[in-house]
Amino acid sequence: MAGQSYPNLSDSELKSVLTFTERVSWNIVRPIIASLGLSTGKGRLATNDKILDELSKLKKSNQIEFDKKLKSINDLLDGMIMYGEKALFSLDVDKKVVSSLQKSFTTKWAAMKQKSSLSEEILDKKSISKISKNHPELIYHTQHNNITTVIYSSVRDRIIQEKVPLQKLPQLSGYDEVIAKRKEKRQCFDLCILTDNRIHILIDIRVDSSGENILFSKSSIVRELYQLYGSNFSAKEKDFYPLIDPIFEQASLPFSQHSYKVFDLSFLTNEGTTHKEKKNSSDKDLRDDLFNKEGIKAVGKIGLYRIGIRIKRNNPQLLLADNIELIVPGTLRRHLGGSSVSPVSYALLSKCICKDDFETLARMIL
Image (cartoon, rainbow, N blue to C red; front, side, top):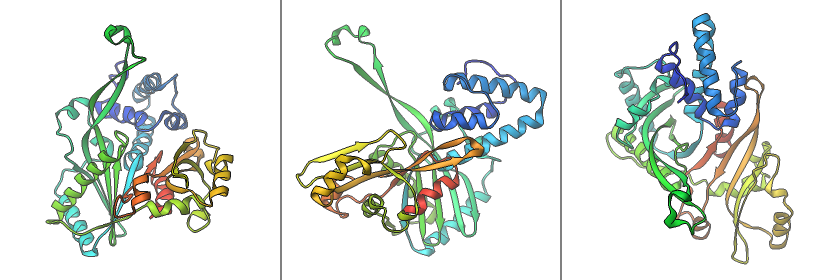
């Protein structure tokens, strides 16, 4: 939370602003803040205080302009909640299942007390501490052109790692560093999109992106769908692994239509050694590295089992000129054993802040 008091701002307004600045990485949110005509400081905390101070004064002097800026913040926050930092699953099911679920969601939502915006569903730390973990709660529903979108809120643990000063633990002075871990409850937002004979599930990975926890969180959402449907139903999950080679080669549709750079690669060589490479620079492509070019030339084809790509995003209105990211997180076990051993049932979508960002990545792989 910010370090000062802002009596002109309500609790919900404070939560909106602070969640907005903390929901995505700082290099994304900082230019967006500037695009809204708000000041930025040296770092996130300093910026929070500046924004809250400006908005508090603006609310007192010009309510109309304040309402306009707050609406912009809430609209952007809605996009971040719905599409930012997700693991995407895609399930093929019988059309009757989707139709039944759509009707049940409509009925359930109509009987609920509905809030005006997603920002009102944001929980403070005190509320989060009182909620049981891993119990999804429906907080949003909309249906348009036979496409149903719902959002679940749930509380999950985030593992916080902190360095412990060695001077506090003289008995461990022989160690280079000591890392302490603790759990902290965080609110997560998971999305379901139902259309025709498919259910797409987007699991919030901002808190934890480990494969085991992603799969557990997805199973919690599937359990909610089973309960709403009235019984279990058959579903065929998409295996994203076969997309890895076409994404790398970029020679067939839809990949040949897009311009992107490979920044994350894992592969197995003919000699039986594994390589994992990652580029932090946004203008570099691992496929252009001499090592990779010569290696592929020598062996004919490398055994790719994980790939990550960056696609440029240019949004002048929000002062953004950066990248959105897609990762197909295959494993060596999947590469060696086949789909029956370890299917790659999800892809990771990162740095999206709106529906357009999400659809740019999703259309490539669905």
